[in-house]
Image (cartoon, rainbow, N blue to C red; front, side):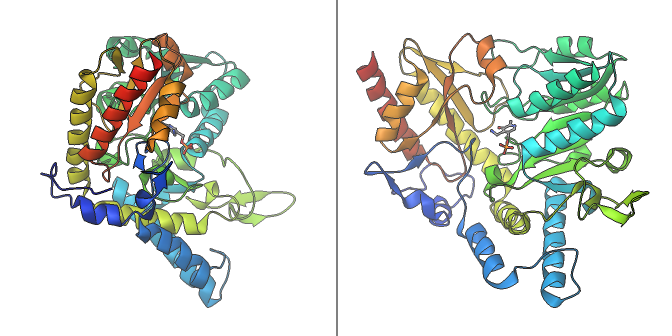
Amino acid sequence: MNATKTIDTTGIDIEKIRADFPLLSRKVNGKPLVYFDNGATAQKPNRVIEALNHYYRFDNANIHRGVHTLSREITLAYENARNTVRKHLNAANPYEIVFTKGTTDSINLVASSFAKKYISRGDEVIVSVMEHHSNILPWQQVCEERGAILKAIPINEAGELVMEEYYRLLSPKTKIVAVAHVSNTLGTINPVKEIIAAAHAKNIPVLLDGAQAVPHIKVDVQELDCDFYCFSAHKVFGPTGVGILYGKEKWLNAMPPYQVGGGTIKTVSFEKTEYADLPLKFEAGTPDISGGIGLAAALDYVNEIGLDAITEYEHGLLQYATTEIKKLKDVKIIGTAKEKAGVLSFAVEGIHPFDIGTLLDQLGVAVRTGHHCTQPLVAFYCIPGTVRVSFAFYNTKEEINIFIEGLEKAIRMLK
Ligand code: PMP
């Protein structure tokens, strides 16, 4: 589509940016693609695609194992990628950055390993009603295994955490708090600093699920003072199959390995195994090497555009889309928190979200429909699901106009 610079007051050069993403010029059902499913996964800039290509053409070797040139070169590149992630999150040390398969894998790692050492019968774990299943099920499973209790912070109608209830839930039995930084269904930016401060006042660690935050806002793990932070590369313009767990050194050192095998050890004998130092203790087997390098390329790209500019630009898109959608009859926005990022979810009275999604697809508009892996949350709103529009910095106001026109048409047809 012909993107213009009309809404850009943030210094974002939208034409140049869109040209960096080859998939954005695709047609879908004969129409220019309007990609509004960035919350599920984001498109990749040439920079990332080329990094993956280059790795397999010129650099492929295994890391941390060989003395030969290729192995040494790629080990260095992989460790440089780790340091790029460290800088991006402002972590104190590169060894506090663990490469995983993604957010889900990172949370499973913490839940499983942390529980082994710190959670026993009668203990409590706190999550929230708005969590993605990936930040519920690992905790539910370890709680069941260990006889612990999973508690959920309630939300209000706007989709904000009820903080008084959270303060009430914190108790000497609470072993860990795990909440989303930004909700994937509502877009709510949670008051994570307050959440962390209240937990720390009782010596309780906090894990933040940053899957929907890292693509949209600056994250500084030292400023937040979170104990664990997780995100997925593919939602921040990097490859699928790779993600990050940040953990404070003191916790990662104290926790037992999650999966074990090659790469995680110092010495092995049948009598006794000594595990490696951080981060290798948590990185069993050959990792997604090109994925780590691709993630670093994505973060470099994002940082060249600048997260402040991205946040402001996307805020403009969200405000515009919110204003426009409010003009339509029978549309109810789900998630009206004061602080939001990147997501506009809605329900239309009497119409199933799938039907709207299917009709929009005919017009080339890709949105997500359903429960978005947050069934307890959609149950709270007593709806089958929502239609979710989720933005990236390559989206435009013109695309929002196409979507709104399409939505109007879909509602007319389905009513
Ligand atoms: N948490 C949140 C808030 C998410 O939005 C997602 C992805 N939709 C996940 C966790 C899981 O991420 P992944 O599938 O990349 O592991």
